Image (cartoon, rainbow, N blue to C red; front, side, top):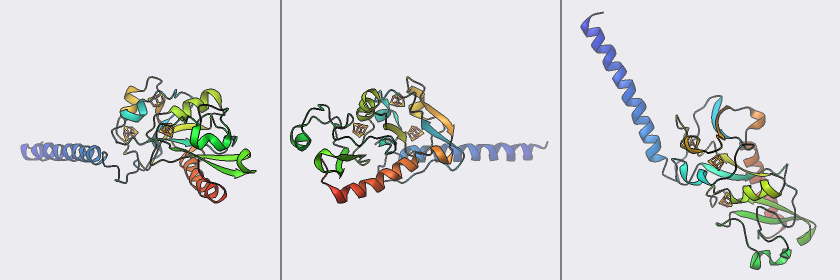
Length: 211
Ligand code: SF4
Ligand code: SF4
Ligand code: SF4
């Protein structure tokens, strides 16, 4: 190989390396902008939290390179039992329904778990959704729901918030090895759960006040 060709190949390699590093730096830099819109790179694999392994240790709140974290809590409406008093919402379950707003000790420190009457009046069924703008991924609601309830609340890496780091910073510290680079199948795509939550949030808004 001639010296000129070798230099050309070396220069090309350096150029590609610099662009990859530059793109990563840009993604991490802009990843701290809460208004930036991202999505995981298109492809069959995504960073995902295995709900069977996660113990809601709260590291997801701070370990993500994005701030606020790309991780959010969701409530799987197919598993939720729509109780008057929800373990993920209220810490003292014997508080009367009408007093939850004024006296109840809420589990979420940021009031991100929303409760609305759905059917049957104040002692009937209720819908619980997560206000993702307020959720910091502390995991408190999901921890109680998983320990005491139907395990309908859990944490997800939101595909539209995650910037798809080569090595997920949460995966690097997760004590349960719960963050996986996993194949994404349409049937277990949690975006579906998230969208269902959004539509139910709208339905609940018509039938009762949030508390
Ligand atoms: S770091 Fe791991 S165990 Fe802790 S909340 Fe995140 S996924 Fe769950
Ligand atoms: S994960 Fe934490 S911040 Fe998010 S809704 Fe649950 S309790 Fe609130
Ligand atoms: S890959 Fe992990 S650390 Fe990076 S943005 Fe996504 S959740 Fe956060």
